[in-house]
Image (cartoon, rainbow, N blue to C red; front, side, top):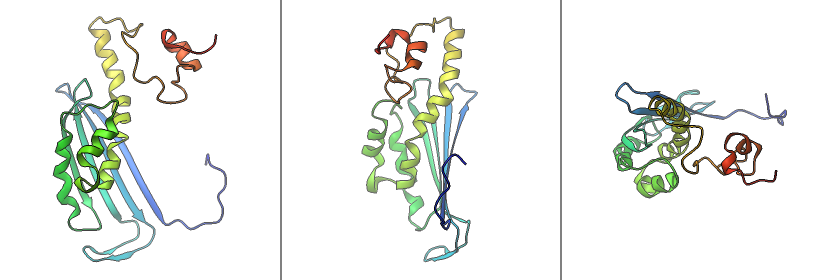
Length: 188
């Protein structure tokens, strides 16, 4: 375990989130997110009756279909398990995200369209890291497409959006100095 040994404690809750990326045969991309919340104990729920230990209290799915420019062409959201009967009724609101682009302002656009009472906290939170999962899924395939089209990838045409998004991609970092030297701003 990479963390230090914890103080004595009792396990009560587990949230599991997975993101999976796919290249479709029609040239589009699907990025899927799945989230579950499970308790280590059973309890009564007014709508569902008994929720047993290990049974999901929350279980939500979302699929974004994107084009090569990271623009949402379609979205599907599903609530399989929730603590209230009304929860699944909001999933159609996520169609408001069709047409937006993953990039700068991604989280803000989500909050504006499906934040608060316009959406589900859990599905909305599931969407935020989908942008990163999309980048991880699509970038290698897009680079391959560009190479096959004869584009010169040795020199970026414009400032890559990944710059200054984290410590490793800081314009003063050794990684930028090595892989994107034309954008390096550190000391030599």
